[in-house]
Length: 172
Length: 291
Image (cartoon, rainbow over all chains, first blue to last red; front, side, top):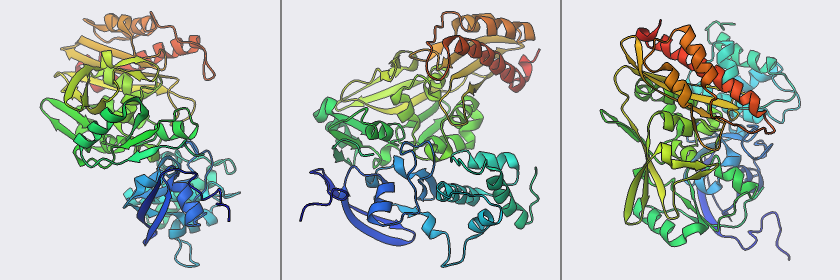
């Protein structure tokens, strides 16, 4: 059987990778050239992580690595060796959306949805650092991701609603 | 996108990394944070046969901050340096400059030394290092040298780093007492490269400027030292008239070219405005200088 061009290493160096994804240890071998995003999507079938620009501008591929939001298109999978990776698939508990996802639904923070997983992961990391309580802070937190549908209004509202839910009044 | 094929090396010690760089020569590229290198590999603007990943070298992590100054090692991430309160207090200009580098998601991976070594003419950190009088520490197998920032940046994406050398540390001397600085820029969108950026440091002597270093990014192949603007403020009180003189002579000797993002004439104009604004920020930071 001919080699599948999508998974063939094309004669390139192959390395063994081990890391943790959404709490599950993963071990696989891969062409050393591929990005973390590609491993997540192609090998692990975690296709909630999207690839938009593939050069770090759009933020659609944002995941959390060792607690920090990063562009998974700008990281070789080899650089994630031993890391703790969180993707959008890790947010919901079964069928129950987490608070941020629920706020996105409530406030129409998405339309086509292509950028959504990146926003969710950027904001998840940001909200762990502390609450976002002003529109300025919200726009700052959103600034590393691009959405071409919503105009960001719903996104800002969704983020600020979490501060309101926690008893902190948003400063508009 | 996939890079052209390469061999991946993950040395366990600095010594091993330097030996690899010596052995592989021009066929090797150093991978640190990868935030500039990986897009270039993806677009195949560069296609090295070997990547030497220095991300595993614990001796290159972090920084030292003491009386002598700040020594930022090769794997210190931009975001770590940006968020350190002690660095922010001692080097407000560095904090301000890093905050303009792309987005937090990029700064979480990108390194200070990597941005310096990449030497993009529109990048914030090269100009800032010239303004701070930093020194680059270059190590090779069996050798080590130090290059002042002013000599380090040679052309677009071209530095004094020679084949086999690794930028292991950026040394920033402790600011003189009475000194302060800031970084301002204009870009199309937040996180974009600067159309023009200005890194300015001023040393106060009483209510007068004893020394100034004003460096522009995005207007020349290397960080541009606005000598005429510096001369316009040294020995003077930073009153509005002095600021205007500095604004109008900032672009003396500067000849930015037209490109897709902005015309050269626009960049000259903006450079002057940013020089004035940065001096305005500095005089509000440094009470003694406010006229």
